[in-house]
Image (cartoon, rainbow, N blue to C red; front, side, top):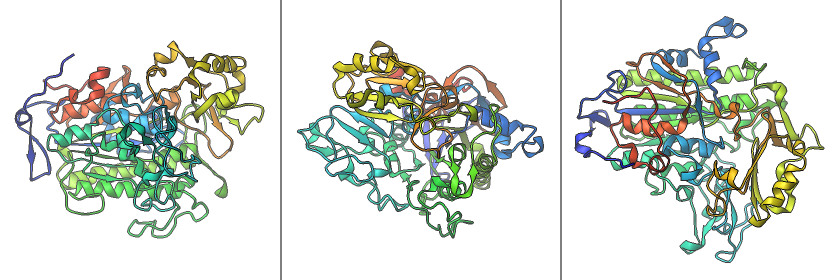
Length: 539
């Protein structure tokens, strides 16, 4: 397939008045919308069912009335893709990359924020937080690749002490042992790079400095990046209403440890987006209104997962039909209110008619049914995670409600599979993928330095953890992990429901098409033949 890119002068012109794009050709996006900005919001953990319940109402909550009024109103002028599937694995890194690259791990080379690469060398310095020891370069090849909060200069601070400590990064023997930043690890470009190359302005807000990843391989994809550390110590937030003092002083180890504190953290993200709508940077400096911008919200995910023992508050769901607990309900209402504030600000600034709003999620959460939860080994000490079953054969593993194993010796793959197959019940049952069956999901691990040698997708509800704090987890391949909300909203759109299966990777080419740009400029779109979302038409 060959992609032809029309001359930019025939597609877009930069508008100084709005700071965005003004179309120079007459086109229609579904129902005649002139789109110059795209606001992409990831409400992590939010299932399609969560949206159906909160927008339509359920008898036992809020008297049967909708409990996400702003999202419900948005849906009155939106395409609702009820069978949308996120990435597999369904974790934050591959999930957000699907949204902005149009591809899967085959193209991006990124499986998790903690993974493995057989060609890279360990970091220069040992990391007390991650437990990863420093090593020799170029003498040692093969290392865990860790891009979570543990690479911060100072994990305890919201600003991460100024960002990423290069001494904690993997090193590349083929490049004079230079540290490999997250954006350099990515093998495919992002839509932010495409938009910037066309003269647009871009912005994104997420939960770690490691989301430097989204700048893309060039390192230039984002004009305005904001990544306050979500796992930092909880502190007062001057200028954030209700958070000038610590909202919940009983849980200050990390923002995700409290139903109240996570809302204060997410308000930092909300404030960033409101500033950007107002033609400012996330921290209030003069700027253009972004052509493409957005943020991640964590409150719903925390509401689904957290058992806050210090206050005897439990989140999650009450039943298999998705009835939210009081803790989860409050988080859904909070994020809905945040969406309402963004919509109100767009309207006040005269940008609502020219902005395409996309509501989705990097990942879902499993299990939805509280009775299905089985934490291994926390709930049954006789059970083992797959990495414990194979023991010393594994060089590294990544396990939550999925297990990916990288072996010390790839020649031992068959032996490791035999060990797992001997008693699948010991790790919660499910399916084992290796060899050709794994090659149908990921790139061949014998030719791709990053692909795991073995993939285990346990029975839905199994979570590999030694504690009982979590009520759910994400990362796996189950329906609860992968089926997420996906709304494409604009005031001129008619309410439409599309039930055919779609992928969140289709969001990236759809955004570029909405702005009149060529989706074929995305490497992953070319490699994986990713299509624009159905129902989004441009003559």
